[in-house]
Length: 342
Figure 1 (cartoon, rainbow, N blue to C red):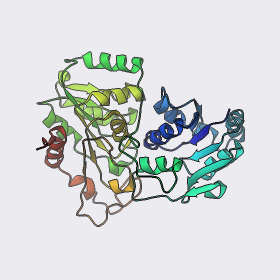
Figure 2 (figure 1 turned 90 degrees about the vertical axis):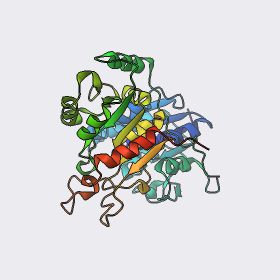
Figure 3 (figure 1 turned 90 degrees about the horizontal axis):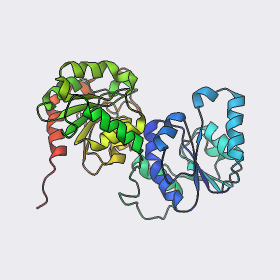
């Protein structure tokens, strides 16, 4: 069947940031993508993808039978001309090699690099969307345009209908709203003042709360302080691409350094990202045309981790506690009201 294979079995944000690479490759021929079930949900309806091959790492980890079934499915589509290792584990390298792909392209810093036919430099100074896009480019290629590294998501008509229905509940479906995404898988990346921010914003906007079931407690706290007609609780209510559609309709989003900021980048929503233990210089900042980042630049202990530990290593958590609601509100005002060009 030929074409290219992209292997991306990492976090949801990484999957979203892989879509510019997929779009670039689709201009050259068919593209298949190996992704986790969660990643596959994010990539649904993407016109640049021929086939999404689901690989449940949790279900198949340590299971020779499960891994072999994935390999057999991949081999039925061989020979791939090139496999692109957007996720660089040794296991991903083995999967790429066993497909029979003639070329296997990945970063020279990856754990599985010994299995690659081409190792490209990992550029820590670039946004990760650009790093992944560069896997398909020669080292002498011109820098990408904004559009080339813009993430892409494709909510369906059903997703849009679900959002329409949600917005009609309890309030005016046409009232402008700001989305808040207070969750993160990493404890120290959760800014602690979303309740106060929601209370401040409710005079001018409805508030849409975005998140997974794990964010139900903070969503309940926010809901409790707002009039019912002022809150849209979408936590654990909408599927992934419907959440992206909801974010796409917001006036802006305030989010931690987590997947919702990448959903917002794909949907073009003005974005304010709050960075605590991590920094945007890692390459995972917002890509929406209108964006801002908040962070405590005065701390020598920051950044303390590539992802964000569950607890502050020094016990003070000043990177988040000292980012006040006043400060975040002022930055959000700037995002909502960009200066008029002279």
